[in-house]
Image: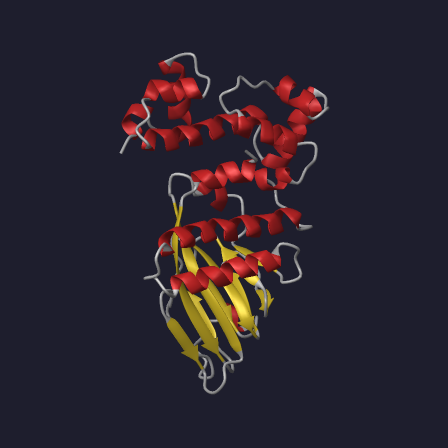
Length: 302
């Protein structure tokens, strides 16, 4: 299993709730933010989106965006409006309209945006949320964009008709497709961040990541991983730490504990979980789990 598929298989994504924004003239919205990841598609016109920690991003027709940080954000018809409190007489202000439709201004809408939210499994959401910027724009010119736009359009259609047979299953699968396509776009971008997503595009690190994700219970060592990518031990260790942000064996430890969390939630016995992950004893697994998660595995169970 490739690393992205492995991580997304751990992050349960529930059905999305969608809304539609039709706007004209000068307008601005401030959204309160939540623990949910959000997505959107600009179908007509343009808009600017920003968070407290990011500069406004211009989105035009065909562009998509993801908001994974969960904090407050703004959308507006111009970048200078996004920094204000929207108190001017010619600016409309509204609260978060997720789950409904919102119309700003009069006449034919100049900008049309549909959006919604993903409800991520809190046990594993940080695998994604900690690695991405507050706003992830995906331009229509990006290679994955057509597939992403098609998946988002299907997701919007499915959430608009909740009574259809199999709708929940279709929405959940489409949500994963949207995330995969968005991450592909991010990995392919010129401005890749540090983190395992960046390492997926690094030919000297990707084989090592694929190896540990394929066999997290194998007793991996740094020399063994370095040999797989044809680098000296010290060179590999330094490159891995610089790109991913943690040393190779620390990454392996965290990955193992993510698997452990999932299996414990599924009521797999603690001893068996430890054995699956390569630990020789219950105590060694318990110590590793407590170090990463903060509580012993026996107390972690729901």
